[in-house]
Length: 374
Ligand code: GMT
Image (cartoon, rainbow, N blue to C red; front, side, top):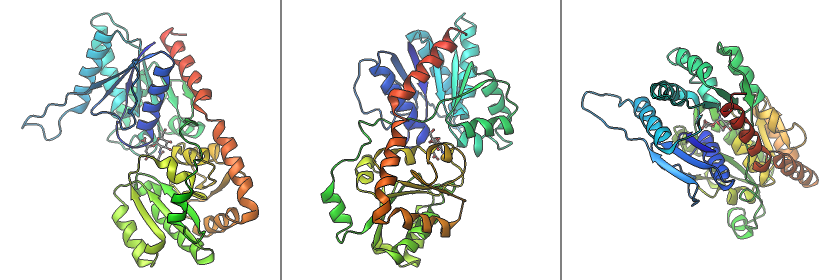
């Protein structure tokens, strides 16, 4: 198949899923054309089946906001026509689904029918999409897509509850490449961070409010008062400065390190004992899956799609949002020498169920179904 993939090229779940999906499809022999405003972060791999088309965004003194959606739709028209694509797969509804609808209408004028699949990732529905300033366009463009997928049962439910959707939504979960995300021997790194055998807790995110990074720090602060421990924070975003301030207020700076946007996150996960994801909303929790693939148990909240991934009492624990006391208690339970191994084993076993080799065929079958209008 010749597939156009539209996504955000930056760090972040939807862009990572889109890029990894494209790379895996290319390895399987499909021709994959990425259409984005800059080279996707994880498109670091050469394959004769991978192509990249940059959206040409022209500014003009009249524009306070250059119209990205129009430039994107024009680029989609161009690529579909000149590369004879069979399908457009857009990741994250805003503004990709409505731009794809526009491209589809333009192409119809030249008798080209391009099927469009929209994958809903999370905040495009749960936060941004529900806002009245976007909701009518999101509803319309989901309904006008030829196929719609969501990354968890919970996201599907949320979409059907909050939007007037008549289109079928297929659930295809996030996936993981177990060749990359696996526990690596990084003892020197562990010794450098935890010289006295401290337990290592980790969190990775884009440091947005929805991630509740302050809860990570409060839980860690409680844990380190009970047992020797260190915390690594990977990622960056709007909450980081506040979080650094909080660490200072708690007098915890010696035990907490901010690592910023680290590419090789699997190296940090390989030496971690526990991963914390206290999000207020989380449609799937790809970062938790990456941790589990590296044999790291997870303390998460019980919202969104997280309970579909993190099995309470087995791969970690799922707690109420903001319940610092419960998260601390469960963290200390997992970190006990007699408990940690069974949690690590269960985390890896669960991650294996989301191996890309299991999930890729679900996308391929869905593509065929939509292309053949079944
Ligand atoms: O987590 C984020 O804020 C980034 C966001 C995105 O769209 O880039 O991630 C969402 O999509 C991921 C991939 O499908 C999911 O694993 C994340 O759970 C989801 N984030 C939220 O729902 C907050």
